[in-house]
Image (cartoon, rainbow, N blue to C red; front, top):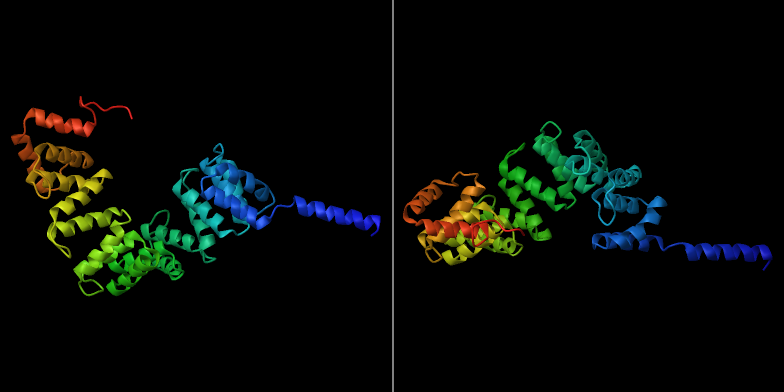
Length: 348
């Protein structure tokens, strides 16, 4: 081998040794980011972003925009994401739309959001199609247009995108921009519920079975779908399951099981949990009758409603408790609400 040939071979060997394994390193960097290893992500992705690799630019840009593992620097982050979007990276175009739409990192700009969502949606990107549909459905930044919303929901739903399947199902169920079609609603709720285990879809499908809309009325089937959603801690399903236990719909009547579910809702500060627990403790349904607990949940319900009762029953219960309870009982209830023995909030 000549000296020139040896020199060329050595140069190639050096370059190969120095070059990273491109796809693996970018993949590892993205995995590190998604796993919360931001230092590892920064180290892996920065050189590839500088080399013009779009996925690295998008992920690095997101780190800077939201201050994940680096000092927050929105202009730098937007620059990186913009570079990826300019290369027709559809995730980056959708992210640009989200940033402008949400207004958390930059001033909200619905024209820019629409532009970027449409850019990605026109190329068949399901999340962007869904985001565009929601803008038209809600009239958020554009004239409300159910026909456009339906078109874009369907495009994304046909690509098996669960949020769009939910949106399309809801439009058919509610008859928004299209004739109500319960069978189509059930079809799309079922796809999201069965194929993707989407808890809100499971809850919605249960309601269709309870009401006999698009399917034969079947309380037992409704309860089975509710159980699947409750197992995922879905609040709406917990509420509907609690009502089923209260009424004995599809399950044996069991107020104590209902109370457990209402407690789970109350623990998440969902007002319906407060309301039903107040009524149950006030009457001793499914729980021991306890005026202090009834008053506690009544007051939390009033606080959630900004001083207004959630129902006539709640107003009646409140007035009854005010009459029959002692001052000390009311103070005990308020101490529980405030979370301190002396009734004053304590630092957390």
